[in-house]
Length: 428
Image (cartoon, rainbow, N blue to C red; front, top):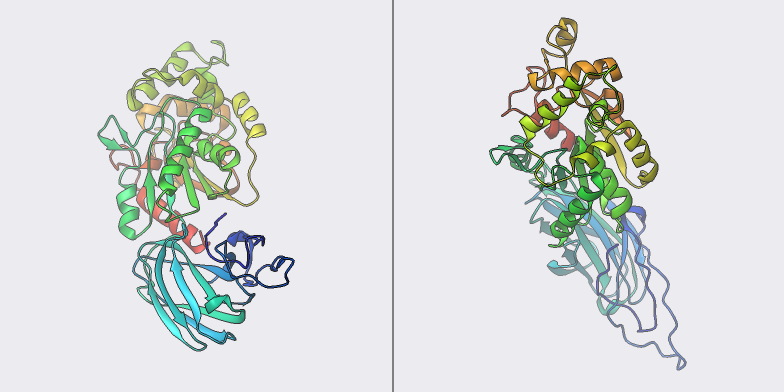
């Protein structure tokens, strides 16, 4: 919730600051408070303006004495927005300002009825337009907004934080970026993307606190107030935990998960010794850990045991009971599906996708345990919220590994570019 030190009628008055995302298109404001025993109206003193609706095209409202309205606009960097004050009943010109969502003034001027002003957005995302009468006089208004230049840029209303999975960092062994080529592709298209890392071998309970600390740092410049979370594998669990239990200010707008074990993975069950040697040999269980260590690196002094326990079927049942979805957040998910080396029909149906040899054993075991999977996570387990479907990729193809080599039928860079375009189209 945004509080800006603006104006009110007295120290004793109260002014309700509504949430922009739930306020609708009304620009009307709250009633004034008491004027005191003398019956005289004291001069206006600094307090908070009230947020109104989303200024996507036009919005109307009434300013009461000593009150102002805030409306949000958004667009790509360098876009020029034309503001048109098509109605204004105040005697003097209205005061208009363009602000960051943190309250920093970017432009200020005055407008009379029928006047237009052109504002240029300094970066991608969301901004606030403040309107009030001079001397804080009341007045009815209709404010219209049109993008008139550089409108075709690629952008989302909110930035996107990429959240890596189990054993991930910003780069593997300091050489390969986890999200191989994704950040430069998306930022090159104009999107605002944040990439950070947390402990690779820890439970979501620990990792989520680290992600929350990153968000505090990223929000500190006052340029953004909401975020889209995009998590791969365990990163999706981290995103859900942050959103449900740590986001007290309601800043997460969307949670997107890719091949996240929402209902656990048999790989974790094997690693935890859930299955005895009569079902799955110790050789296979050892192979699970060896494969992870070979590709992702050693555990150092972290807690892979807690991590694996949490991602077991039993652990995720407990997790899901504790981590509830928020009704004001959009949740969506994708799953990955890969094919065994001898499964020619699957390969034909999935653009030639074949499981990375590193995960050949785990893929085969998961086919018997859970059905279709990406080598580490079953398709059914990956479904959460609005399920968007499967991609023809194994667990590391989904992030462009190794070094961009994926099956002919899957382009991970196009996948994430289209994902953000979809978020943009939905107003996020």
